[in-house]
Image 1 (cartoon, rainbow, N blue to C red):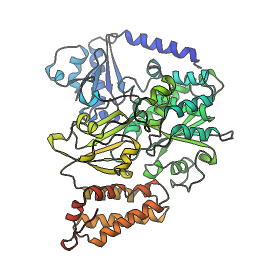
Image 2 (image 1 turned 30 degrees about the vertical axis):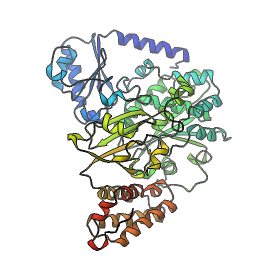
Image 3 (image 1 turned 30 degrees about the horizontal axis):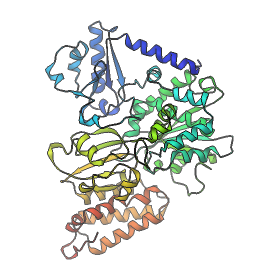
Image 4 (image 1 turned 180 degrees about the vertical axis):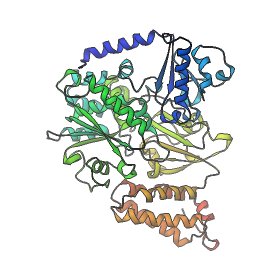
Length: 541
């Protein structure tokens, strides 16, 4: 079957008309988080109740991706009034299906327009969260899916697409914040019959689950972004490199690819045009270092996941030595809205140097945890205290840690820092891929520093000496602090090793491994001093 650009609108209207035949549609979160606390049983219970009550023609139960408020799952959203129900149980099925009164259920009902967790969000990447059935391409088409791809293929030249992404000011959401348009330009200008587009879905930061949730809940959005990128830079083949631990994301991505190929949206003639684009999945074994783009390329090629010396850079010589465009999941998920709504719309969101929105996975000691998407420039404090509800039980925030093992610890008095690339770096942290771990006053910053160094030590690929041995030595020193055996000499050596790793490690893993340690030392020197031998407590930050 080959779907033409004109037929996309017809297919969308047909699906919308089908949805309108139901008096009610119940959207059940079937993402990994809700599944882990009984979401599948809730969905099955609702479907069974619909069947038992003979309401199949009136009520539809829809599985969706992550709705965001993960700590209150399983979640069910009622489409007729956008009411969101928290901690839903199979026993709630009758009240939801038959709209019968239930005091217990009503006590777990929230309004997504006014609830603090949702009210301050601006959803672009997560626009379809809780709305689209990730296992039905028709559901994505009804939400305007693949219309941006059709627009690019029929009304724009490849250079126009690159220019639009460049003018939008989108920066890579994988961590470094490199201008997306510039990267696309570099690949587009390479003269080569074979080019590749690679989606980096090797999300490995502790506490991070942004990319996983997007792939689980809106896989077609990522595929559409990749196809647009392929058209723009002259690539006909794409790869999604996804962690093996993300079984549900892999399954839904596989389904989405098959559906898109069956519809003629991917394949030899994309949307009945002369553009050819195919996508394959490559499953990683869970090595954190494969999030680094050259190690990722090695892994796709079947080699050991180790970083390559650069230059040459992937836009010139990437996958199998061919020009390669690498962006992460969230970056690709921004592409279709930019094409559909225009670069001016996107560039008006955010700050002067950081445009658009950013998705964060908020975890830790907060009242609420889950996914939030905010405009760049939003104060971190607003995310932590308003959306996440502050510390559970009423404690005080001590610090947050952003950017995973590559990021830093930001103390409470600096939480008014805006979410943008430069501001977070200025306080010693970084945006990273979007993990945000919140700590309360019971947290030991020395233990936090040791934990992240242990993570980097375990995940080091071992190719370069500074990272391979330096992380081990830094971890050994931090363990001495945890054991109250550290001396002034240990402190000095810790700082020297941090400088060494930053300056001489081959890739970002080793270069950024000292960040959590040095920010903890910078902002919480008294905690390190308290862990030193009595004769050696002259800690200088």
